[in-house]
Image (cartoon, rainbow, N blue to C red):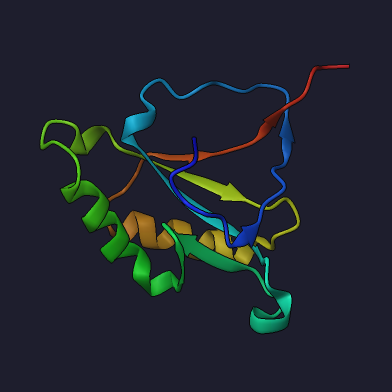
Length: 118
C-alpha cells in the first residue's frame, strides 16, 4: 500500500538490529537513489519527494507541507524516513540531513531490510 510511485531505484541496505515504526501515519518518506529512467535523467543519485524529483533546497518546503497536512498535536511527533539505495554516496544523504536539521525536522529514520544474525 504505497502512497507514492517510485521513480528512483531503491535497494535498501541490510541490518540485524531493526525496530518497526509505531505510527506510520506520522512518517514522511524521502527516497534517494538512481533514477529508473537512466536515459532521460542519468545515473547520478536523485532525491524523490512524493511523486517527483526534487533538489536538496526543496526539502524545507516539503517538511513544512508535510507538517501542515497533519494534526497540530501530531506535528512534533513526525518522523522523516530516508529510504536510500545502498549504493548511494553519503554526500547527498548528508546534504538532505543538513536541510532536515535546518527545517527543525530532527526525528530521522533510515529504512533497511532485516536480515537474521548468522
